[in-house]
Length: 192
Length: 137
Image (cartoon, rainbow over all chains, first blue to last red; front, side):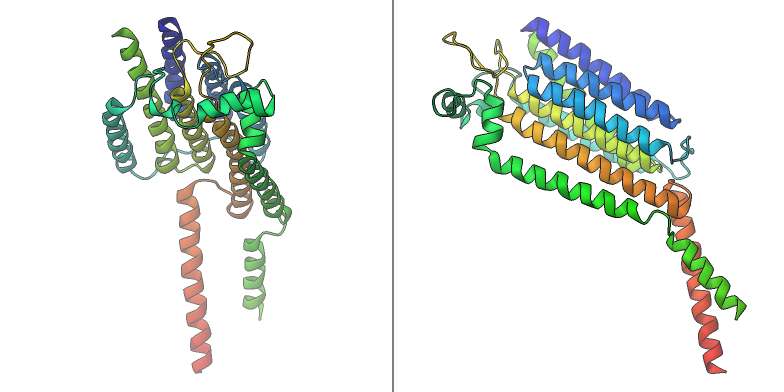
């Protein structure tokens, strides 16, 4: 257990380093690649925390598809981020306060890996037994995802479908800019 | 003692990552950076959930024939699987909005865009004034 925790602490420190590098990154390609690396280290952490299904989903979807989306969007966007004009003190203060409160509350959280903590008590033993006796799928995550919580998965597909339609609708009229129409109207009015 | 200290370190860094993500969302002007911040925030929340699901000496929740096996909690894994896919849908939607904003304003910096909006607003007021003066004449 302690070796696992040491690996975890190491990986989570790498993630912190990547996030701090992200705060300083100014070019877009660097930002996108750092985000991809962040997702990959997160996938490694999911493996050490016994969440293998989540790990390969994060590696393929979080580090793969999102990076492709970012790279595709990057081709049409300015390559550099401008320096901030406004003061960043207020957001920084807000984040520090919220982070402090969360860290203060973390002393009330159950110790990592404790089998008696409330999250493991309620319905999970039923799911584990039912997966063997009622459903007969060895992978418990699959049986919960597809059977016990099938409606959640159905809702997820609806969300993804809606997002796909919305993306198509937003990008469809990319050519006709509202501003151009406005400026043309203005020219026409001035002409009269 | 060491294990509890390491566990607390895990929680603390996850909270720090969340706050860095939140800062990127609310503190930066660049819209692409805001979306990257959202991704960072999401991934750190996933980490928090998966950390809760871990059991000491447990195995991944895949059934085997050995008796008395301890399985880690599968429920957070299921929830986070759903959340990862929804997160990518959110990212795609946000990126398409950023592309649209860029084609409309020629910039993805918040300051530029609000300045352009302000100019447009004043232009509108000017044109409406001239129209009303013409009407009076």
